[in-house]
Image (tube, rainbow, N blue to C red):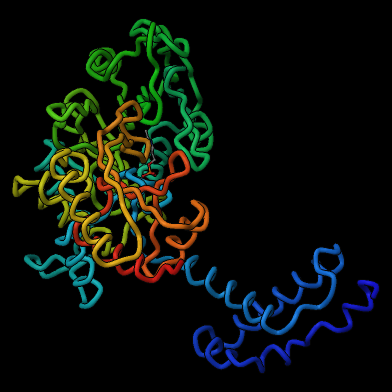
Length: 458
Ligand SMILES: *Cc1c(COP(=O)(O)O)cnc(C)c1O
């Protein structure tokens, strides 16, 4: 039969709404979403017939399976927790930092009750939403004052748009980076009303390059930590401490986009990233993310000179970039763990970063034993390396331990089964092997890994 003739035999929407599983589907999705999915399946089937990929109209079992597949796609696409077994600690696609239990609790509590978000209890009057958090950030970092916005991109935009309207912003050609998600420093300077004043070359910029660029229309100096790439070889870019004097002499603000807000020195772990405190010593303002190495919720933190922070507070843009109580609560609780002095144990990002190979090996052996006792898979334990991610420490290869899964399934089929598991699991695939990286799978998640594997049939 001609494809055109075949199309007449396609079932109608109403036929598919009377399939055996329709009541269950409708219960789960509601009728609008179900009809949209059925329409999609009908349209896709029509296309397959027209293109000759299907010789005739398939039976109802085919439609049931296609609709089930669409519903499964919908289920896994909805925002939900997943198990990060990739080994990349700050995985941008997987939501970056996991919060500490204390921060999770704080998040819940402020959403369950009313809060003193903008109420000053001691004064019994309207308060400033940033007051308490600014104090915590200042105490921790030594900054005079601080402000919190939605993310670090917003922090950079707020600073540039407040301080550098119609003024020249001096920046090294080696720091004109793209951060990801099309956030490009040169474009941001222009978009916020500043005038880009590039100095130096890609690989080398000297203090005198900055000095020669200063004129009566200079607004300030912008440093950008090239956190997601590394220049190696014949390179030089002055650090904040080398530029501080020049900036001071000309009364220009030196603002420093740090990216990852590292609050503890990790050089003992071979992780050489400047800390916020070090950079603050020489910069007038530093900007950093809340959900990278700091290990808190998505936020952008600006810390530094009080006079400049006050200027930022008067920018209308702040109203659009301001954070909600949930962010403030989770950030406050995370920072409190630093104040209490044991962040490496309490903050999941730092714990994952500094976990010893011996601990990871023990976790891997424990998982392998459980897999072999409770599931039909077999497992191997092997060592490897992984990355920090999130544009942090791009040249660091962290040692790690991996559990390899073995089953009579193709790598693609096994990966897909794990992705669609009850607690979706994102593994690492390397050399056609499905691997679970122990640096990012929490001990508390091991039971869910086993539950998932028990659901996969082969
Ligand atoms: C990550 C990063 C940003 C953007 O921070 P978000 O919190 O993702 O908005 C900006 N600048 C640098 C240097 C970064 O590393």
